[in-house]
Length: 209
Image (tube, rainbow, N blue to C red; front, top):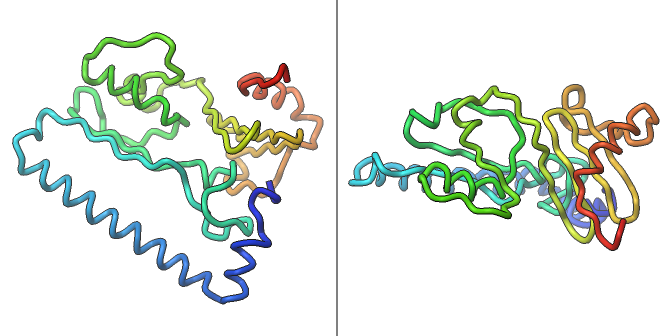
């Protein structure tokens, strides 16, 4: 994970230049600009003819590190770089306008939109409709989320745990109930070996491994 983060690259440059604060300020400015333009789109929808017949989905493709763990940009499997914005808005008979803390995947968006629009479902999809969570955000949701970056580098996220396995066999395990910033890697603790073996079963297999 440290090798992937590359602290000797971007982070070293920001430390040398003294521009860490300025880089964060620049990033926040882009967020504010994006937020303004989302508002413009919503204003147009509010004043247009399709307000009552529109489902809004706002999402991003990845998170972004701004120096956490001496890492910048998106190229890692830690929570900061894999957690994304996901907002779904529509009629209140389906969307309850509440925060849902269950981990879900972007591959769930397609089956969700099929469901919301009353279109036929399709076989063979990796994703699962999120409509049940939209109706009941606190319901039990046992489906883990799979994330991949690079060849055979995978992460599994559940309600509580983040498990990472790298292509060289390296492992990381974080308990988000007690360690939301992922400072303590529990993978070397034998107590958690059964848990990691269980989570590993959700990983894709390549070349028989």
